[in-house]
Image 1 (cartoon, rainbow, N blue to C red):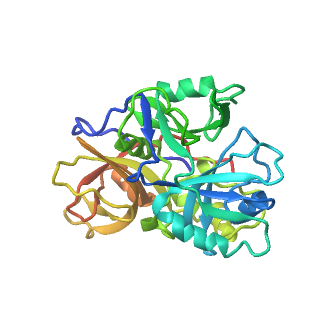
Image 2: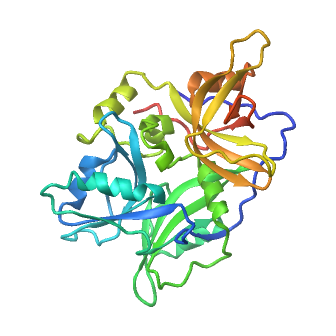
Image 3: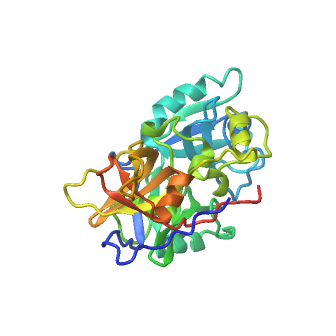
Length: 357
C-alpha cells in the first residue's frame, strides 16, 4: 500500500505558518505535554509486554515511539519513550512523553498490570525540563552531544552538562515546510539546567510542527478511536511485529497481514479566519460529493491532531482511504466539523508508507 499522490491545488488560499529556528518550553502549565516515569528492576520487561514496540532490544542510543492498546487493539495512549538511566543499570528508568490529559488515566490502567513486578509508575510531569527544538537549534544541539548517533528518527543522544546532570535529546520526525523538512528534537534536561540556546518560540510553533510531521499522538479525546495503523504507526517506527504479545497484539497483527487497513492518517491544511472554530481531536470529518446527483455527505474520518496559525490550521486527519482517494481526484470535498465546515486540502505525507513489513 502506498500513499496517494496528492496534487497541490492550483492557486490555493494562503494557509500555513512559517516556523523559525529556536526552542519551545513544553514544561509550562499550559503545555499539553506530560511525562510518565517507569522505573525498577522489571521496568524493561513491563514496557515490552504492555506496548506495541520492542523495549527488550532498546539500545542506549535509541528511543521508541510506542502505542498502548486496549485488548481490542485500540490505542489508549502513545508515547515517545527513552531510557534515562545508564545502560546496564540494575533498576532501569524510563520517561514516556505523552499528552498531559492522558497521564492520570494511563497511570491508573498501567498500575493494574504491575502485580508482582518490580516496577514503579509515576506522574513525572514537572520532574524534568521538556523542550522542543526546531531547525538549526535542533541540529546544533545534536552536534554538541558527544558520541551522538546518526541523525535518524528516534535516535537518542546524551550530553553531560557543565554544571552536572544529563541532557537527553531524541530526534523526532521533521516538520514539512514548503519544499523543506524542518529538523525537530525532543529535549529533556534537569529543571535547573540552562535553557537551550536560541530564540524562545511560542507553544503554538511546536504544535504546528507536530502536525506537519504527520505523526499524531493520542489524546484523551481520541482514546480507543484508532488502531495503530490508522495513524501510520507501523511506517514511523511505532510498531514491532516480531516481538511477543501485548494487549491488542492479535488485532494489530491481523489488521496488518490480512489487508484489513482501510483507514489512514493524512496531513491536511484548511483556511480559517478568526471566527473559524478550532476543531478538537476527535471532531468528525465529512466527505461531501461534488456531483449534483451524488449521494449525501457522510462522516469519513476524525481529527487526530490539530494546530492553529494566523492564516489557517493544519490537521492530521484519520480518513477512509477511499474518501482520501476521491478527494484527490476531485469527486468529493473534505470538510471538518460539519458538511459546511472548513474545507481540508490534503498534503503529501512527509514520509512513505512501508510495504516491506
